Length: 434
Picture (tube, rainbow, N blue to C red):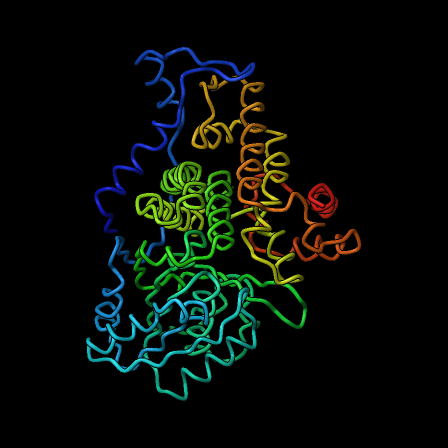
């Protein structure tokens, strides 16, 4: 991974900078521990379980867009398919990338037939273009929808059939073409993940396709691309990154590697998302949000996610709404649900978001207060960004709850939620979020 120096310093300092030593409310304050006490804690934790960490090659920094062409050449490209969308074309980024690809001796084909929440038939159409043009490498320039569509096209190019055939985990049997991803938003993490999320138009739901083969070969993160995002997309993708960080940190599949990236992402979003809304040209804030999206992606692709995403996928598939906005509505409710039996895991999350004071490790009351503070802080950020207070404001009705809940139970993300959730639990959460 290549990080520009200023971002490394920002990422290293955020959590320490945001922690105040003043206690909040009635939270139990932990007294300083002696070296012997710290050593005893370490020795009692036992041997950590094995951790597997999937990651593509990553190049990070302003002005790195040109490197996508060199990456494509290294991966054997002659006729790359550049997947993008009309909004990016209007902003001029695909034209700039095509020039870099041509300078590298490549003959790119541009396909821009992607809409938000990519549809199964769109991916089928993109695959036809890939095949008819004799393409060999896929380059995606765009947000999560573009990147997911590019992964879907690659999957079909290597394995054939329909994209809906591959719902679930590791359903693809054959290799897929090399992929270079250039994210243009600060939130989805799709450029480093092993996920592909597609709308099944026959069932009006989003399906989750998961597999190691879907981890791209290369991710080029150029924060300059974030400056052309509209405010609503900046808000939505930023909330998505925050949800990724929080759900990855409490996931049943978390490990020390994912924990680090998850907390860094949470802290960076808490510190910089609102500033990018108020000061869109602030290069430092944009760069920190680009890092937040990257770190959140590294966390969730390895730790997976939880109930907020499992539920959000169903609402997005039903109503074709921005994924991050739905997350912003659902996440506070899911935090409270997951924290109810054991809130301690939410203490570092609250601290990363700026909770004043320190919570004693053995204080259940303090941990519960921290978890509630984290849920309220997520809602405060959502309010500042203009996110609706309930799903009812974006079109979900009481009549939708049973079918949304049933589909949620089949979503792969629910399997790593830290608390077991049955149909009645999911229905209660949906109703609370209405």
